[in-house]
Length: 385
Image (cartoon, rainbow, N blue to C red; front, top):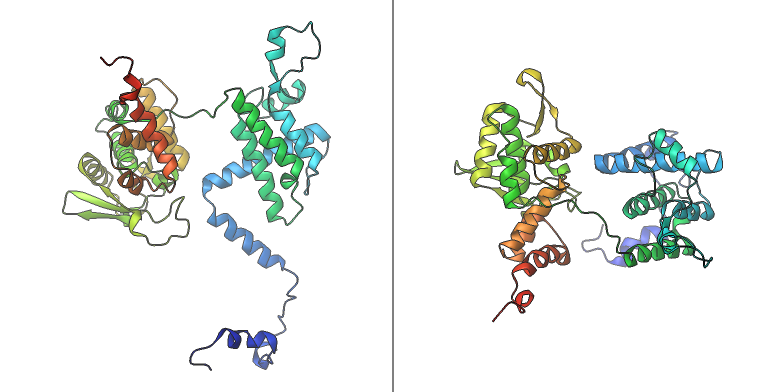
């Protein structure tokens, strides 16, 4: 034993292997260090699955189902790893829109501007009719990029040569992004639920058990910094602390930016004012004493299982529809609404980021600038006298 072991001393056992005690090697269960056993492989995969969020698992599974269906339709055989590079290139040109070729001078301007892709119409229809696609035509660019990323991940986990890392595939995907940008095609964003539309949504929540739950859920998600739908679905009473009889402190035990469950001061979020009152009303009416904060409500007012992340999204969409608010909304509208409203009210950037948990200043500043520009003096110079 060394009182203060040096680096050389720590490496000594590697340079001069010591005999292994007999009691450790006499049980007949020694493994081959170069081979992973089936049991260990299954255990490792189980840990990987458990560590992933449910949303990630669902999106990965959906992407791989689509890959298998498209490959079967295109090549009349089952998909197997590793996938050849030409297959990935074919997938990209089948699903990415481009301008039609204009070789013939007689071709009309309308035809030259038409966007086309290489997926045969009969295969497109078959994928839709079989439930692998929601609609005919090319998917959004984000969907295409996500499916390529999922295939790449599958190759990494299987320790196979990754075709998505090939120089040709990377160049093609990069130029595809630029082509979409040049055409002005941008990812469609959900409308932000800022203060005014949120007030209209809250008006649809009555004093029924469901109304109390939805009011508490919406205010909890918005007022604690725009929580993600997975964070709302996993919210637990054990992480909610009552303070001074009027407010709460909620600790995010797990989030997108804290996936190891580390205890961090910045993960403690205040729940005050109307949001705290709504939470108190919901807890009193539901009688929840432990476990998930937000749960399904069955017929007769009986509480069911914890809400899934998709259910949080559905509640937001349903309440927005009841409030007759125009636009496309999702659970992310609550997060976007909180950040946008903070920018509109000129809230300090550090305080806003402390609430939301954003690690990128650029992301938050983007919301701030978009709202602040409407009232800036420079945008009104033509109107100033």
